[in-house]
Image (cartoon, rainbow, N blue to C red; front, side, top):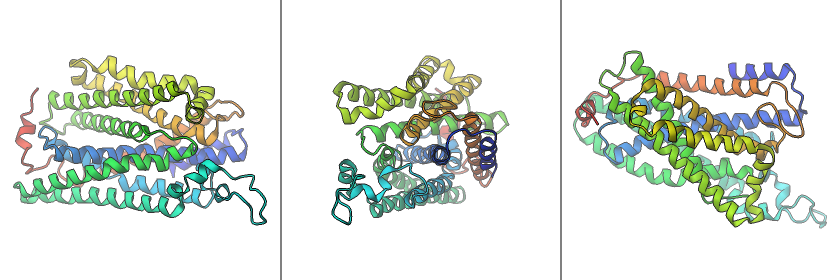
Length: 401
């Protein structure tokens, strides 16, 4: 309610764009905020499963922290479901391909259909409503089931102990990674890349996944630092902080590599239907596009490459917030040009001017951040912060590098 209230207040303060842009922009921001925190939560679920599949010891104390992060999965799915459902019934037009008029080459009277789009019509088998919603159902069932499964058996391990549950989680973790390897890309195609329906990139799924993963690691690191400052996690030492910092650094470099490879290959080939995605951003958002790349690459590279930097919690906290905000801006730039078409960009843009959009964007982001924090902290409060009988617990407590 607070999130919606801030948006309505900003609208009343002087929204100067026409009603269509206002309406479209509201739904675009809802998709951005909804996907950003949902993406971080499923990336936390991925990292949790990865720790079990690789039988990692150092992070066993942090199990509950990542369980809390992926407890947001159902909430994130709910937001995205609302955005997609309203679009399917033409309540907004974020997804151009949802207009059924685009697929019919001829009208009922046999005359050519002026709205027919041969490129979108060629993608109809994949973007057909039944197949699209079937994929959504499979994503939702898979992520929610694994999240609840991991949480259930993690709590049981506190009671039973031993290694049986650990090996059960090991097998399920490896199984989840198989599903996630496919779904992390296909959901990015469905919910983000299909906004620019004529364009596609085979690297897009990996690029979006790397942004989700680094956001999850930053949120986990910030939460760990805050809890440690409050007196929790007595056995978490600088080596654990160092490892979390290494993940922040490493995935930032992965994101940078994927972003540049995607851009460089499209720029080098210079095929008209491929370059339109970046041409739109060049024409209206060039400064933002290169600024986001610079922050997401240069800031972690030059600030976190040193060992001491990754062990300094005050420094890690500040750098983490900068990178997290920049990755939110990166997702913003992935959605807005294909939905608003250059009309809006953080309070200014070509074609229209919208007053107080800074407050609208910041207000909606803060609203979702508040919801995310509430869900995560509530989950943390419902179980022991440190697992009691994890078989690798002693190794984690005595972890020193």
